[in-house]
Length: 122
Figure (cartoon, rainbow, N blue to C red):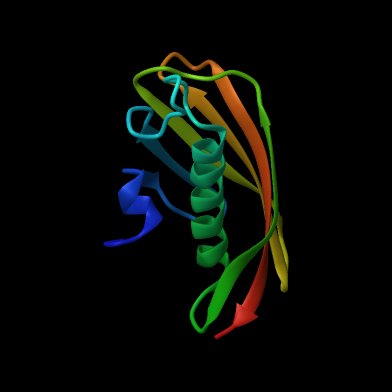
C-alpha cells in the first residue's frame, strides 16, 4: 500500500473478507485544525474498508470502484484510534454495498456510512 492514502492516513487492516472487513486508524494526524477527527478522514476509512471488501467479492480480473458513499457523523474523537467494520449488505454480480460503522476506542459511535461499488472487468 506504499504511496497510497491508506499509508498516509496510517490505516491498518485487521480482518479482510467479502462479508466483513475491519480496520483502524489513529485520530492523530487525521484531524481538523481544531483537533477533532476530520469527517473526511472517517469517510476515507469507510471507503477504504468497503472497497477492499468489495474487491474481495469481485475476484480476479475484476475491480470494485466506488459509485456512491454517504456518511452520518454522530460524534467526533480527539485522541486514540477509530475502528471500522464494513459489513456486506448486498453482494451482486455488478454491484456490492456495505454498511460501515466507525467507533472510538471506547465503543462510542462516531460515524455510520454506506458504500456501493460497481464491479468492472479490468
